[in-house]
Image 1: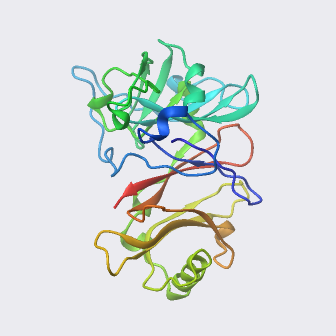
Image 2: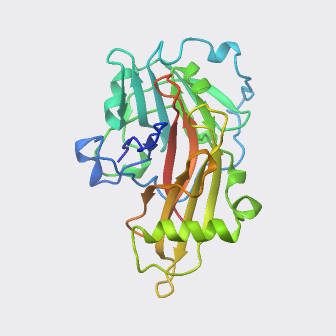
Length: 292
C-alpha cells in the first residue's frame, strides 16, 4: 500500500510507493516503513496525446495554469496514475503533517482542479471526480482513488492537487535507466556487493545496476545518488538472488544507505521523482517497485 518512511540521514527522504494489492488495501494507508509494489511494469512511458478536438496544453513553470500557493503555504497531494488518481502522499496544512495514501483523499473536493503531468511538455488541468476503485485493485471494492475524465487518453506520469503543486515535483528522467547511465566502475560494484552482504552475508554473484539517479535531496548542491542494483538468481529464472536500492549521500559510495530491498525477489526499484511535500528544505523521493 502507499507508505512513507523517513530515512536515517541528515536530509530526510520519504519512500513513496505506488498501488497496494487487494489484501493490503483493507485498512488504508499505514506509516509502516515498508515500500509496496506499483502495479507491475511501467505502463505510462511515451508521449502523451491530446484530447480529441482539443490541442494539448503545453505549459512552462510559472504560467497561469500553475500559479498559486504551494507547501508550506497550502496543502498538496501527489498522485500516481492507476486508471484514476491514486494518492501517494500529501501535506495537510491544517495539521502541518505529511500523510500517506487514503488519508489524503479528503483534501480534494469533487470538481476541484488537479494537474495531470506526463513528465515532459504535456500537462493538463482537469476537474476531480468522485471516489472510484483504481485499476490495480479491480474487484476489491476499495474506492480509494479519484476519477478523472479522459485519464486514459494520455500517458500521464503523475498528478498534483492543487495544480500549483506541480512546481514542487521534479521528475527523474528515464535516461537514468539502462545503457551508459547504469555503467559503473568495478570499485563501485564491489562496494554495492559489500552493502548487499550486510543484509545477506552468503550472497555472491555479479552485481547489475538497473538505475543510477542523481538528485539533490537536501539542497546543498551536492548530488545524492540512488543505485538500484540486483544479483540474478542462478537457479531460478526471472528471479533475483537479491534486489534493492541504495542511497549514496552526496555521492559517497563508502557510506551506502540501504533504502529498501525486495521481498519477492522478482522486481526492481526505480526512483520516479523527487517532491518537496511540506515545503521544507529536505525533499522526498518517490520510489516504486516494477516487475522486470
